[in-house]
Image (cartoon, rainbow, N blue to C red; front, side, top):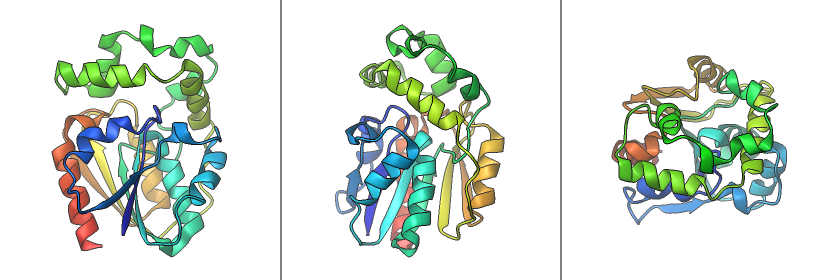
Length: 225
C-alpha cells in the first residue's frame, strides 16, 4: 500500500520533513506538493492528482488545507482509498475568519511581514522550540502572498460535501488548534462517520511539533489496514 501525503496551505510539502524522519524507510511514501500542480482551485488540483495515483491501494494523509482534497479523492476513487488520516484538517471552512480573509488585499498575506508572535499564537499555540519556529517561518516565506490569498478564498468558499463516505478515517486533532474550529471537525465527522478522533497535545502545526506521536499513530493504522 502506498502512502500519499498532501500538504497544508503552504503547499510545499517541505513541512512534512519532521514527520517523514519518524516514519520507517520501508513504507512506500509519496509527497504531492500542491505548488507543483498546474491548477489553483480545489477541483483543478483534485482532478490533476487523480491522474498521478495509478490504481494501487492508497492511504491518504492530509494536512490542514488538503482535507477536502483527500475527501474528494476518496469519493472519486472509492475502494482504492483504504483509509484517510487527517492532520489538523477540515473539509468545510475551518474558521469564520477565513471568510473575511478572502476580501483582504493580496499583500496582506505577505508572510515576510507576519509578526512572529502572531504566527506563534495561531500556528503553535505556545508549543515548539524557536529553531523549529524559525524553520517553519522560512518555509512559509518562500510561498507568494497571492498563493495564500487564493487558498484562503478556496477555503472560505467550500460548500458542504455531496455525500457521506464509509472510508475508515483517523483524525489527529491538536488540543490547542486555533485555526480549525470544533464545528469544522464536527462537519468532517458528519460526512465521514467512520472517523476516530485522536487528541494530541499541541497547536495547529502538530505534525511538526509532535511528529513522533503522529508517526506512531500512522504506522499503527497502516500496519493494521
